[in-house]
Image 1: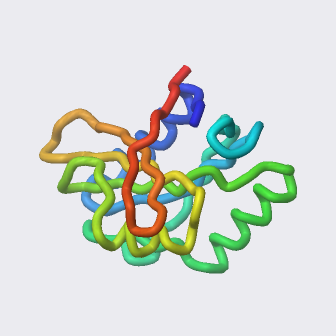
Image 2 (image 1 turned 45 degrees about the vertical axis):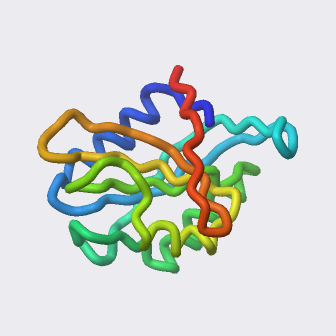
Image 3 (image 1 turned 60 degrees about the vertical axis):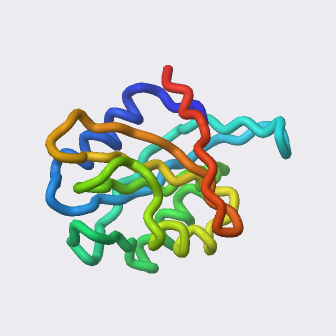
Length: 140
């Protein structure tokens, strides 16, 4: 995914606002091409509320997620990524993330790791059929 630095900074800023609990949201993208030639470019970041307010898991209320999805669709964009933070670990999908991703094929998982007060680390993954594959975030 191509993502402007200000959009990625917005994701990181959201994570830093509540470093004790996971935060979450979605990224809207323009998509061009298909298959291996498909290229997505981030257009908007939409914050969401973690209904659990927990350091261990996140969930977006289904009504809020539907509203975000509809807003994205109305603008002829696509849901390109779901983002969230890991407040105690590196940015790698947990088993819970892997299970949740089964409902979102083709959607990237951007994770902000806030491990032990270190500088935030951001990584993105595609999770399909329980398999995790890191994908590049082209920041520019």
